[in-house]
Image (cartoon, rainbow, N blue to C red; front, side, top):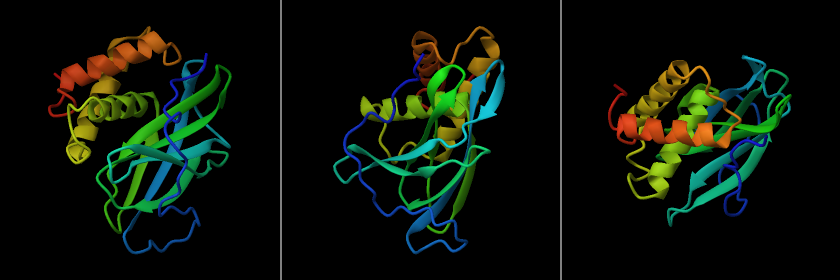
Length: 192
């Protein structure tokens, strides 16, 4: 079954992004480093040779996307992005389950290097955060590092508390997103 289509948004723009693999971070940029792991046969497997897409907000508050690279054989990627309130990285690839996407939220600050392992919990948190912005519950600026962490922690707790959760089942995924949003008040509070 095909995973939720986060990347099916607006137009493709490349705004201040590069993946030169160098060590120096340019002025006004932040380095985003990640590793995408997807569930397969009750274990996490790297999404190797996956397409890496950046989702960010334009000046009008619309989500724009840009394909910014691919993952290596270990599911790893590195991208330099403009420092801004919040972005999402989405990695699309293949598992034995079929096409899938794994995603995560980042809060890029100028000159910072941000590292994160993307997995089902970060993906649930990502959709929860972007949904909260999309329906006007919070702003981009309010989806800060603390809210992202609260959403990710709640998503991990949800998966652990629901052993029958199926990442590839759209109804299960949507239920997880709604539960995480509710449990954290859109990330404002840690899950209880």
